[in-house]
Image (tube, rainbow, N blue to C red):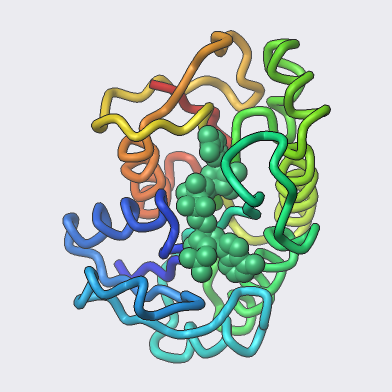
Length: 219
Ligand SMILES: NC(=O)c1ccc[n+]([C@@H]2O[C@H](COP(=O)([O-])OP(=O)(O)OC[C@H]3O[C@@H](n4cnc5c(N)ncnc54)[C@H](OP(=O)(O)O)[C@@H]3O)[C@@H](O)[C@H]2O)c1
């Protein structure tokens, strides 16, 4: 398959590209800085940002993809939950809206979006301590942006999978536990290895089993 990745220069994005290539898929990546993709000579790299719809169109013009995978993040000044946000408040929602508009122009029907446990229907089943941290720290901006995306993608009419892992860690790929969309039962200190999440993103993009769902995943 031919997959367009948005956010492919990020930590989970690069692992997702590696897994796509390992499985023999063709990959196009829309990135702000093409130099960040030197390790991927087999990827079609398009320079630009998903916040600019013309740049998104350029990425589709090479060859319309079979599906789009979005591994964008709205970063803070550091990974600390209390670090200041450094992204526009709707970075992810507006980027996904641009992608979906262009998908419709090019008749591409499927988008897979990396989100987080606690977004959408999984909020109520997040342990209280974690909900407190998400609400009171600057992680709340990212959750609000993911929640705008959740609502708008559902209304868009495209086929979606919004993948919701718990805390991401750098360990080797491990077996994943898949919870229901509401994340009921996920333990307090759950985590998910980025490599496992990358593999799951590829599975959800190339298979139809998870279409129109929002699986919560942990290791
Ligand atoms: N950290 C966790 O424990 C955790 C847990 C669950 C879910 N998640 C979710 O996982 C997702 C991906 O996280 P990650 O750690 O893999 O991300 P990351 O390494 O921080 O990568 C972020 C990506 O977003 C792009 N980006 C950031 N700001 C941008 C902007 N203003 N305009 C255009 N592109 C921009 C970056 O592009 P550049 O390379 O050009 O900067 C990069 O490709 C996030 O949505 C996060 O909510 C994280």
